[in-house]
Length: 391
Image (cartoon, rainbow, N blue to C red):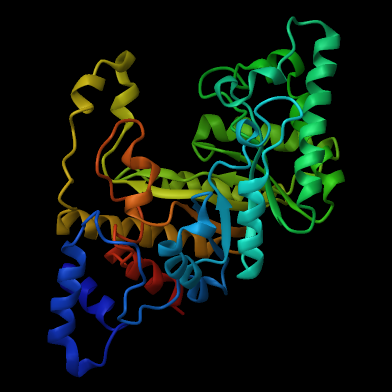
């Protein structure tokens, strides 16, 4: 299998007569994980991910908010992606940390860069339904009906201001992010659900649609492809649709772990989304190579041990690179089967060195994406390209 993968990768790169030289080059590229290298596009002519995917869906990436000044990222980004999501600068705590004190310099520059390079922009996010991700001033004191009205009024002002500023320039919005509970409750406990129940979700979509009637509006969450949370998500979407709320797509975050990708549940989820007449986006894709689930197990009893666990600081072994490639290939084959409803597939971060999974939930050297720390394609990249080019 490894030999077959290497040969399949080579055929994208060179004429047959140069195989021996290129095999040596590919091995050197796969083995190098140096942090000191600047991200760049490999000079061996690998195909554009965006081009090979365009018959199926658009390829996107969540990327650093200071993108215009990060010159080392531009070549890799512009070669392989057509949609960009600023990581943090449009979240409520960044754009309006205090009431009516707005900070638009970073997102303004980000959107202007995208326009210059004909990239579409996803706004992430208008409401993050977690107390620790919502500026405290949003929540009024007390639980009276007047407090509910004040919270909705503040949310309306925030959404109308932000979406209105970028009307026609940001084409998609994660309107509400992570409102569903991971446990037995329906909605995540927060000031939003405590004061407004699900009313804030419907209001957020309505106000976003009023501010830009042409934008694609998304409900975004994680684990919403797993059975229990999927049922909550479908219940929410059905309810919104019955109320005439303009929700257009479901965002599946796609933060998976190696050997634990829920392929069958994803299949069922796409079928359920299709039955509702909605679109899907894969909004934040990666495959964690150092599974993180034990961090939360048994009340966190393993956290001290895990905080010292950093097995791949010198790079991924060839066997793991191959497993990662196989699982990405299977994912994209699944995405292709449901391309009629999948609007976009976005990775979360540009290359391994920039991934949030290097520091969440503990610091370790991680390798979850298609490009290594020097911005060079990994075996997973070639596996995905092969799937997208299959007849």
